[in-house]
Amino acid sequence: MQRHIAPVALVSLLGLVAVGAVPAQAHEHPSGITDLVTPAVVRVEASQHVDITLLEHRDAIVPIERGYNVPIGSGTGIVVNPDGAVVVLTRVVDNDKDAGVYAANRIIADHYDVDIPADFERHTVEDERVNRELNACYPPEKRVRSCFIKVTTKITVYPNLNPPDPKGFEAEIVKLGDSPDSPAVLQPTGRGDGSVGLPTAPLADKVPDKEGSPVAVAGFPGRPSATVKLVTEIAHLGKGGSAGDSGRPFADPQKKVDEPPKLGALADKGLLGAPVIGDKEGKVVGLLVGGGREARMIGVREITAALAEAGVQPRRGQVDAAFETALTRFHTKYYTEAIPAFQRVLDLYPGHTVAAEHLRTSLTKRGTAEDKGGSKTTAPAPGGGLPLWPFLAAAVLLLLAAAGGFLLWRRRAVPEAAAPSGAAPPPFDEGAHATSVVSRTQLEQALQRHQQPPQQSQQHQYSQPLMTAQPQQVKFCTSCGMRLGAGHRFCGYCGHPSES
Image (cartoon, rainbow, N blue to C red; front, top):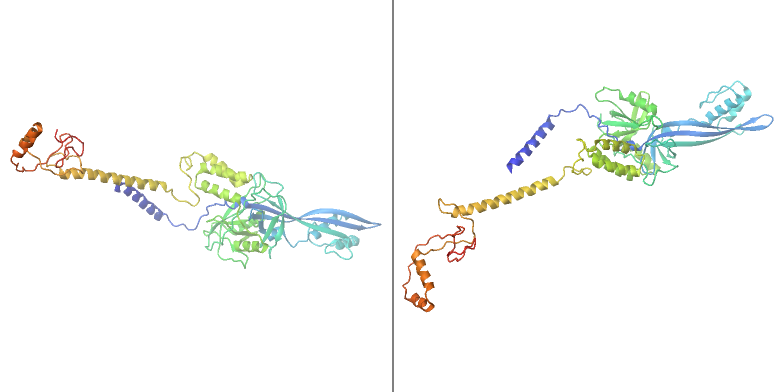
């Protein structure tokens, strides 16, 4: 048994030496695992539709009607429960620009053919009459007015689907933040996506405290399409930042990359409000804010506080549970077992982009050398370690070997102790005992007595003198060689008659 234990101990020792020999890293390198969050990343676009009616005062009042769509903002958000609740930055869906001013500039410029910029500023024109109409058209409404304005806010959410959904679904504002860079909460008002709901992004408990902690930022630079795909970028958290100030900065510990300008450029391209994903658990730790050469992160506690004020409960759904099961098999390289798991996800939510990508990869690697599930081994359960059955089987074999060795030793040891010197030990017989053996003469006389008639034999028996005891000798069976007990007529080991 020691011959089996020694190699195991040697391998364990080598493993410990190898672990100790790994040099300490200068900083943590991101793993890039963002699969739990990216299915729930969405593109959010907000606009205001302005219906404006200009009352032209000439010979008669002539109403002139126009309609304009005014963009408010766009960015990235995350779905936080299967019902479709979305968290996004306030500046994406609301700003201090007045769409009524924009519409007044447009309708006066178009109707009177004057040069007025199509913006959100109030202007003055040289023509006194037109200038009077323009000022009467600007909101707020006056007692004497020339325009009637109705503004409707429209927010459209485009989920991460395969193939992309060009229409998306509409949502309404449940809660706005106190500042442009604080979280806003949206709820869908349009169509749903089946009874199982949407994929959701898990929220972390807190922001990593360690400076240089690796993170990832994921979002859409535009409306999802065949050419506009999800963008993922790695980064590191800098030092400082709290809920009361402008947020947590980004900084590369090795100073090889200037991360604030890199992430600020992404915010300008459409990743404003994108989730910042912690590297260890793959959960959302914050949202990206900033732009230009600056970029920071607001923390997850601000997200959860906004949800609590809005009365929205973040939670995971049926699609998420099936997807996490599939991911466990995929990332542990059990590709054969991952295939039906990803197919289950797509049955629940056919447009699941990440599940479709990993399914293709699993089909490609099924049965290859990389596939741990290609043999009859079973994929480990989520969070499980080594399987227990090899250790149980080894324990049973060791017990059987020990029992067999003990029985063999016992069978050999007992006869060797009782066998005559120089002779082969007889088979072990627990029923044999030492006995006295008569001489050949005595044996012949006993046989003669048995051959005489009964009356003669009885008389002869009393007339014979008593035989003196002879020295005791050891007697063995003539068939198997087992030692015989005193008075035994048959061998206790093989059953052969002792007198033949």
